[in-house]
Length: 126
Image (tube, rainbow, N blue to C red; front, side, top):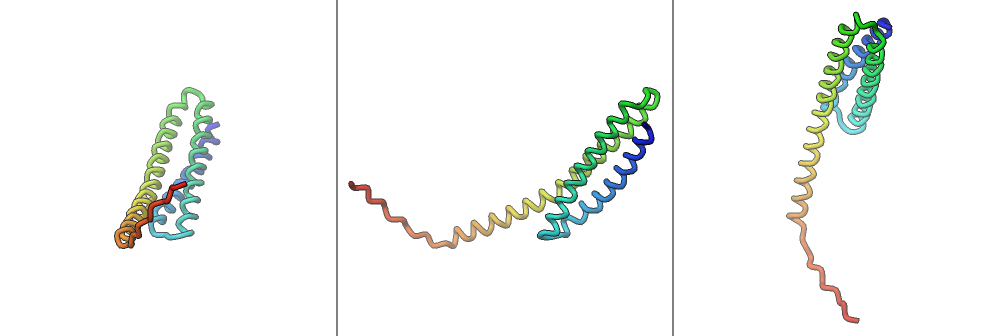
């Protein structure tokens, strides 16, 4: 059982290193390249969650004497994943705010400068 847990640990370590590397790159990308990177990170975060679920199942099968140590390590990995998820959301929120601000400025400028032609009243006589 413990060897499965250790295999999951190694996979989790590799995966989180890849996720960290990609999260750092996201703000520097644009267009489809950024979209593809975001999708990739989302998939990897889901894979990391699944690994943690597998580790949790393994911990439940470990004898009580060793369970404490493994539970502590698992808790640490869960905290690491939570931090990665926050780091991932942060640049996305910043990008979304910039887009909304830019669009808001564009639309308000267009509305301000647009010539408004009055609409004639409807003839409702029968």
